Structures are given as structure tokens and as C-alpha cells.
Length: 74
Image (tube, helix red, strand yellow):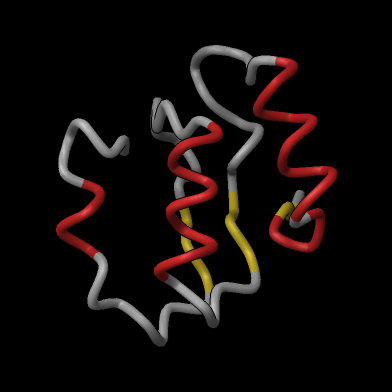
């Protein structure tokens, strides 16, 4: 789930409140997080953001905890 793989095609989901990426190798990075914040104004939670096949990079983890910590759920 990256901008390169077509995330931008979901820009019309303005009312999206919860995104569940549990069990996926989503590859969401800082660019995608910034895009989500700009295009999905109602998002409140991203489930599974830190649970993926590859551990999140320190940069991604720092961004989410700094800018949108409420998006993270267990």
C-alpha cells in the first residue's frame, strides 16, 4: 500500500475513519502517512500499522508517534 502501487487512487475515501492493514506487508512509509493525513481528514485509526512482515523503520515509527499517535492501535 504505497503511492507507487496506487494508494492515490483511494483519495475519494474522505469519510474513511479506520484502515485495517493487519496481516499485510503494507510498506506504508512517511510519504504515505503524510498523504493519508492530507487526503483522509476523518481517519482516526490505522490497525496493524506496526504489525507487518518487516519491522517499521525508525523514521516511520517516529513520524507516526510524533504526528498522529492516535492512529496506532494494538
